[in-house]
Image (tube, rainbow, N blue to C red; front, side, top):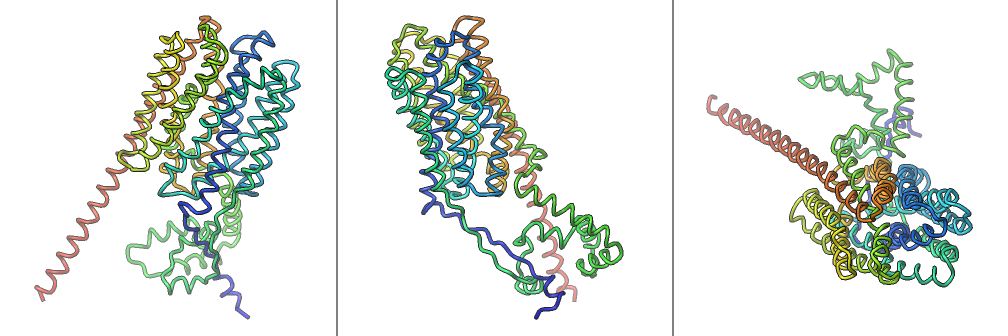
Length: 507
């Protein structure tokens, strides 16, 4: 039987699983493909329902747009909760639960008697379920792919445009056949397919091995392999400070110093260990330290202004075409045309990002500026052929933007913090998703022209590009700092080698 001292010295080393970059990851990609289609694809195709609900309840454009706004904002707000639940339970169970919630929400919405009930069902409940399905699935794609991550994200997000292409005319057909209420009932049943997407999710396995500190030291294993809570128990912050202070030549063993402090003040160490364990447990589910990460916060501000312009155009394209005298099926076809070019934009520009010809942030900046410019030109289109050209251009540039905007996140914070970062990013971006369509609707009601909604979206996207430029400058400065530090280290090494070469000559 091992002595207590040896037992205390044992630790569990968790070796992260290797990223497959393929294999079962393609099934994870297929799941994410369908999740994108049955969440954001439905939101983009909801413009067909918008016209019917607007006429049925005889309300304003801003009032009807709150349905989509509440759904989008709920997705963003609940995203951190979805990340925490996935860490606590499993990605699979959270996605299945989300699928049931959004399906129930849409079915209940089919029986709504006023807009308030639609806000609560199709808006809040549906958005809540979307958050529980979308966030864990996108996180899993990031875990299964590393080298091919930009391409994988592009292929997964293409599900949004493919199902938008299919669902827009399908929704119009269902509304004509069964009314908007019957179409919502069918949509609620269709969203149960998200349960199947959840069942496909399988977590990566990690390798766990029990080792002793003595053995680790003998074999040269890094303490970084140990879980964070074990590291905190071995080397608290005040102990790290002592190591830094004595590193200039003191031969005292750091672990001996820790045991001495433990013997002198055991209550202090016990309180510190308790706080450390609590902090580690919280960080395991929600990495709140991300709010102190300056590049992450700058990118989140980009997300806020981008969300102001992302969702309004898809919602108002069909009503805008109808206001120009375009018949309903031709107006619905505009969304399908946009979806086809959206698909091409995601796959092609995702492949371009995978080539690493330029920095991902630079590529994203260019596509966002182009997207804003296209939206500013929309009010010039009035005939069907001009609207087809606008829809194609918007779909292409929108796809190029969406294909890579999530890929930037792990490049900023690292893959290990991607789950929490995605949740916080969506939470911060929620204000833009919530206010975008109603603000556009407000301008539409005031000006009595749907074109003003597109102008507002274009301006918001141009402003969001400014934050990407700031982020690019921050990245360049950090790279220059690292390069300068590396250069100084090389100079020190060269000086040390010269001194060592001179010493034999002097002897």
